[in-house]
Length: 341
Image (cartoon, rainbow, N blue to C red; front, side, top):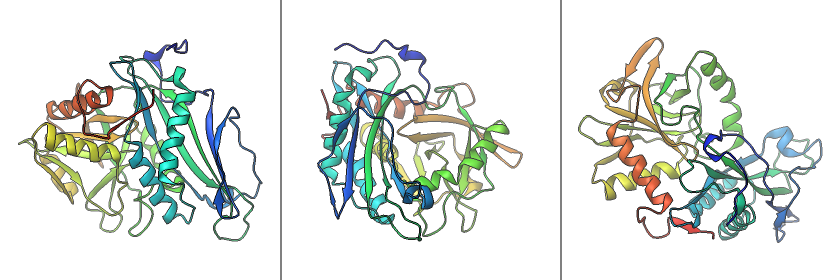
């Protein structure tokens, strides 16, 4: 298959317009058939609900070229389920989960020339999203909605690739108890923008957020879940009702237990315990795993034994194994790879 003439190995994580995107509309209580379009712009009322009250949610997943030349997506059924959960919480109509997976397949097939080649380190990022599209001036849910998926080729999420990151403990809150931290709502990310820009201006790569109730326990960062490795190689990850349930984290925990034979634990992790861990990493669709070298808590540096030059040994095994499954060089559990072409 011919590929676009792109310097794949030097791609950043930014938007590049591709050929096709998927669009479906909800009106009068039902979804239309949906389909592909060339049009990359959206027209709607100036009073559209999404513009007034941020009624929108989204997902993120990737398509890869495997070692044997197939194009695959990683566990899109879980993205479909998570988006359905987000829609219910946001009082939006659920886009049928089977139809969601079909739309992903259609979008990738239509943009197959944009899927980076195997070994390039790049991937085709897919952004499914939904928003309230009709004019709403009172505070209430929209009546009409649009579901879309666009695709864009991307490189590493963090500029340094696998270079360990420096995080800071944020004074801001990411999510409120009984709020929307457990779903992928656009408003969650809007409220984090001030904090992430401030972190970058202060020389940090990301924020670590604590639980907003007691400001005692580690939750996650602005764009990824967080995992720790103990000195005896146990994988520990925060457990909280306000954490977004990461598909990558869920997959990594399975890999740790079933492929690497490591003990896995999900529990509350107090900030005071963090210095006891040997390794730390951020996990999510965009980054897979990015190693963390240190966390700065109001001037106090918490440095991990894995250091600031490379991934820790356990984190690297997790990364290599999951990437091997995604790339087709390691046989994964049944259903983890959705073959597109």
